Image 1 (cartoon, rainbow, N blue to C red):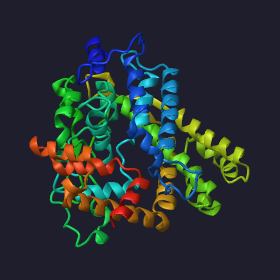
Image 2 (image 1 turned 90 degrees about the vertical axis):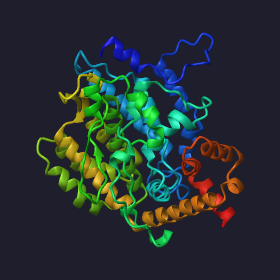
Image 3 (image 1 turned 45 degrees about the vertical axis):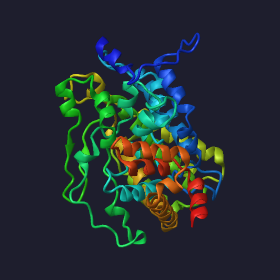
Image 4 (image 1 turned 45 degrees about the horizontal axis):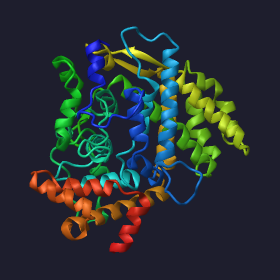
Length: 433
């Protein structure tokens, strides 16, 4: 990475006003501290990961999930750095990769995917809603570390958090599905959001990409069609983002599985039929040889056996990751990607599909998600009906200011609801209705 690129990577959108006495921290340590101490990060302790908050105190919330993703992310960086990474590629410091992993879910609304679809439906005429776009918005604008620039994080951190570096208007399917007759008839599959950055935040998005060459930027923001009935999808992400995303996938596939096994949601028969047998058939795969012994430990009545198996799975996936060049970009931070060896990537995909089918998409979980979906839409409709009467004072001020600045007032309402925890949204719903 050139000296110019390094300087661009440590730049912040707004000039720093607060100079701490005897502060010798790196820019990455400061970014990590701002995320870790933010209200948006704390709220993750009461936001649904997979299983609904409150029914049991064992399983993961979005907060504990994010902490685990950060631990896995630093493990990936440590593994790559110990295995002769390319000289022209500067790996992210551990504080930087921790920042990305800790922040990656900050924008998710209450009630998980149900809340996301609900807000996207309510914002269908105002730019849409999407969790990753909301994360970028919180980091750059909403979190009150500064007056108007969010946490004012470095450019490289913001580039790393952009899993889908395109504006939503470039990705949104056209036309949108017909409007539902009522909230209760809304089909989730119809209103799953496109994944990108809000057009409302275009000036900050442009600033993050400002340091890229014209050719690199043109390639980086490229997207592909998935068919007329689907949104377009971005093609590329930065090296740092590829590490964070792999860490997230491992945590999702392994740790959410652990929750399901311990709570008895997944049976040994389903595991053997859908996972163990499929992984055993993968050629040239370390896990294929070990899956029999790991299966015994996963379903052992001793928790230490289960933890040993979970640790072995996580380590197996981390140590199958290496850097690979795409030869598409001038900038090494874009050209190099963290990739998992194909056999282990196939095994992780088996785990993720199992968790999706046997844990996330079960009728019991979907009913909870459906209820949360209704809560979010009813709250949005209520606040939009009379904002000056019902919105809290600070949010009302932002709503009025947005009107004066010719910005989206609906976005302000979406920001308010997206920041709620599951419990707060439920209590507010009870108060109003």
